[in-house]
Image (cartoon, rainbow, N blue to C red; front, side, top):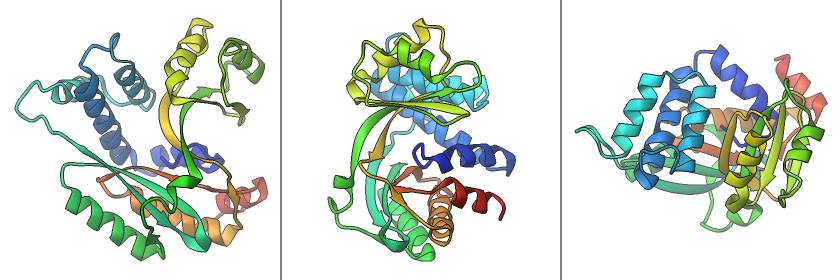
Length: 251
């Protein structure tokens, strides 16, 4: 998913509706495999795996798939795979910045896929460091908004130095330093507040508001990148007003 911009909330729901669930499942399985490889198969002792499994369950990933992914990641079975994590920096339409995260067992294939997706959509690869300075790694915890509210979330995390708590209607998004993410997530759970996902993401230091035409082009580019099995996440600094989003939803 392309970070947690306002568009990402709508896009996640579309992914289930328009048949892209298989692509989503494949990426969730990779997350689980990598987490199990890095920290072991014990959910209680591996918070990264715990959060990866939680995200899978919230996205209706079957338990059998989750269990097989944990076994593969922790080296149980003959089909275990080791993935490389590769970041690409890119520019989209009107200079919109992109950070493209790949999890792959073939870096040449990943590079080819990213270049092809960008070239087809009018984007270009950027030199290392020319885009990354516009982003910071942050812990991002997404809380469903239907059973709680911003005040309850703020009260639960009051003792922690969270960067931001933002009510987006259907979701409340808590942004933290990556080192505090697990502690904040536990504080929410201890307060009886459910959460959808807890991930370390690249968050733009300043969003760039775009018009409808640019937004369409950027979204098409992100969709093209995310269609690749090699691409795990795409982060961008673009955002749009409620009016622009409404226009796009009516397309």
